[in-house]
Image (cartoon, rainbow, N blue to C red; front, side):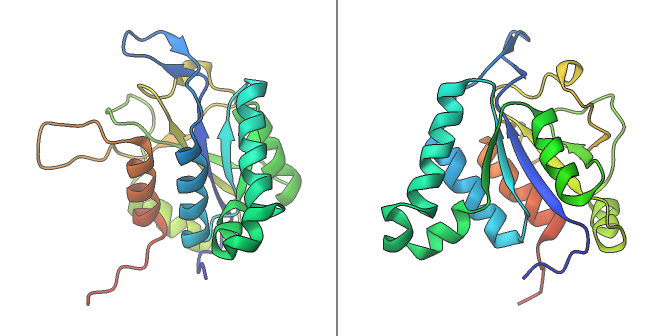
Length: 195
């Protein structure tokens, strides 16, 4: 059970996203996005996991995956997967995801961005954000980008602050977004006991 006071949400954005040339694109939703993000959300007590894409065919995939595991044959076969996929929701934009959160809590969420690169935007530390989770009742939305990262200038609403990038001990810096999501959420909400 989550011990955080603030409601925390997560979004995986597939548009607006940058490609390697810096152009704005829409990336494809994968089945792994839906399952891994949902399992992460259930494990760490997130309220919802949004997959954000404006493409109706891709939103339909998100809804079909959720329906199979929550209301369909998958729910009976694997109840633990049902518990995870109940967290999944498709949204056609980040703005639409924020509207769902605002409707649930009566206030707009505070948006926290992530990036593999250092950004010029306002930064917040993991420690400060963890402390805010414990002392505030504002909803928080942690936003991840696919492809080569979020097209920050195109996002509506704008992100309030960014977390520092995840840096390993080598020069290689190209984690899968699902690995970055897991590391980030564990740093923010994990119970870190010395064994």
